[in-house]
Amino acid sequence: MFREVRILPIRMNVEGYDVTILEVVKSKPINKDTWYHVVCYIEQGDKRTRIFSVDCRSWDEFKKKIKIEVSRLKIMRLLMGEKVWEILK
Image (cartoon, rainbow, N blue to C red; front, top):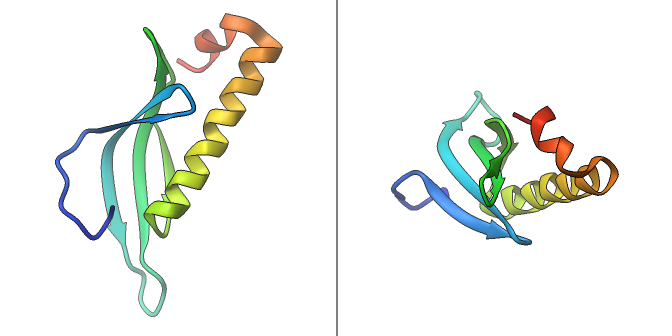
């Protein structure tokens, strides 16, 4: 993902939730690995989380981390019901 030029925003489906990537910022500290700061949000239907960021080193790492975020959202919905969307605005 990060080697190619892509037009933002990018929308992808992760386990039934839509993830929208708004911005990707590349960061390379001196003598360190390259990091990417990915700004995104998760939505399902007309409900959506607030905008948040994920720091990662590769597209594969981003996919793993965003799956974790979606899993957290699913657990919160199981425990709190639809009230969770009000908290995550």
